[in-house]
Image (cartoon, rainbow, N blue to C red; front, side, top):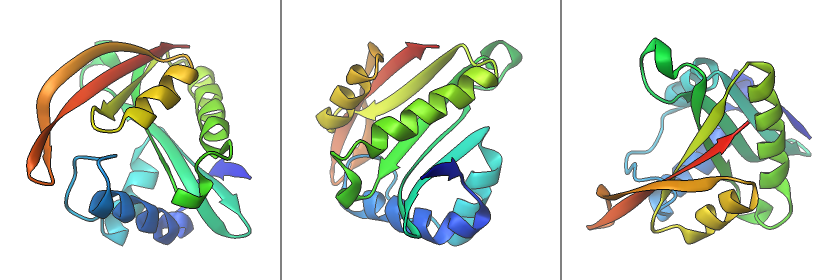
Amino acid sequence: MIRTATPDDAPGIQTLWNLAIRDTLITFNSVEKTLDEVQAAITDHDAFLVAEDGGQILGYAAFGPFRAGIGYVPTKEHSIMLAPNARGRGVGRALMTRLEDTARTQGVHSLIAGVSGSNPGAEEFHAALGFNKVAVVPEVGFKFDRWHDLVLMQKFL
């Protein structure tokens, strides 16, 4: 089931987010999220969805401002994260479909994905959903003692 996240979902989201922070290059962040930070993220984003099965959070997708300034309001940057056991099961596609529908109802013109250049699976996932690569920003992320590129992908809604 895909639904809007609530503060009660924060522990499950925190588990997924911190796993990615500790063990992957999905995010360049190397500092784990506190429960308060996750609860704030849920309420601070323009949309924050979770995929749940039997009370277990399988993943989340959210969007918020791309950049500050009134001219950027119709463009949003999104994040998506899945539990390892949810990958390859259509959960990510379902989350993104619902997130895009939510964005359209809010009048969003385009979504931006900031993808780690060291995570080619994420780039392939977004391309399969109709996102186009619009830029590569070399060596802007540093994690696990090396530099990583940021791939920017965009989809017009």
